[in-house]
Image (cartoon, rainbow, N blue to C red; front, side, top):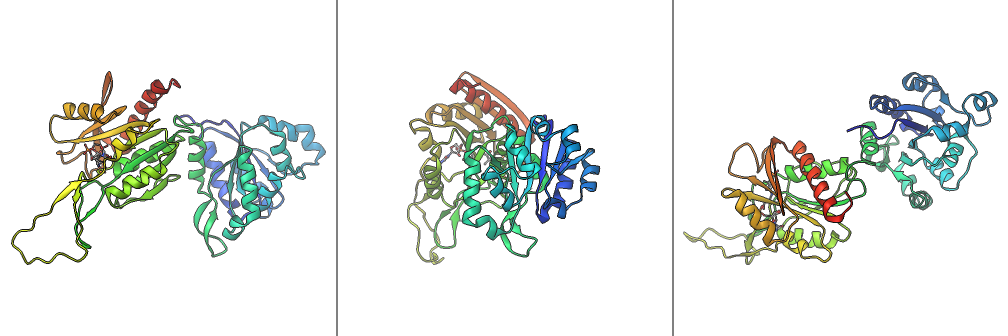
Length: 400
Ligand code: PMT
């Protein structure tokens, strides 16, 4: 995918994380972008203009009231040249300045004079981030259309742990990429992984779903600009960057979680292997092995996908069909019986695809059409499926 911005104005403000802007410039230039750097006075205390000039391949702009600069390429020229203004790192002080519309240095003046989209990657101590004044400034900037990239959670330069770290340069580049992507501004909910249905306090019924297919869809959708809510069963996978993850254990948990967060979701993709049946009762104590036979009575668990497809208005609903025989007939039955917009069917009796494997292959059905997506890794397949979803969603809503 082409990088969406050619002319990037990078503002660097006073934060220890300013050293990461060197790597950031390199990565932006690798994407084919031209980067003009505006360095604040506080930023220059952490990283030198000489270093930045060398990596950016051009002049670093610092002074507002400099007659020579204004003659050559004025603050207004910078403001008009920028296709996007990226402030990384953005200090608490600079956010305060920005939110009040101040113009007492070059960077704040260029921000005020430009109509380019503003992307802000904050970096500060976790307490400064949490401070009511900072949060009020952020809310105001968001309200005016600024997009925040991060901050990330973790150990900070000051030794404290919390929210306030600058995103890694690769993640900032990925966020810029996704902000104009194929699925930009679409809210997508994905269910993934296996549910566990308790028999007693230590035993459960479950299945072999690893969650990889659903996590790959969540990751691909986020990278293409969607706001993604990932409702996950029990898996051992890291949360894809930028994705909101809600963890569940049983089918009932997953049902309740989806129901609570479904408002405003445009596309619902159900990859989770939800237990169809659960023990009708759960023993409160561990069941003793004092009989030769043990009979468990199972009852149907709630059908999450069917519940979502009954909503009025309903999201665009994509079901998965895990089949060991008559894949086409069973997938089409699910499409019609559950009132779905699309079904992605996969074989689950082959060793190298489907459950708990790195690869998969899908046969996708919708009313009046179908497409085979041949075997490949799950992330590639997720992108192919999302391309189809976007096309069909566009047809359904007339927005293509
Ligand atoms: O997780 P991986 O290891 O990567 O494996 C991926 C996968 C094989 C689990 C995935 O590709 C897949 O096929 N997911 C659907 C598994 C399944 O439960 O299929 P089903 O044919 O039984 O269910 C049909 C659809 O209804 C599915 O979208 C399912 O999420 C949904 N469903 C089913 C039962 C239920 N109670 N609630 C549901 O929402």
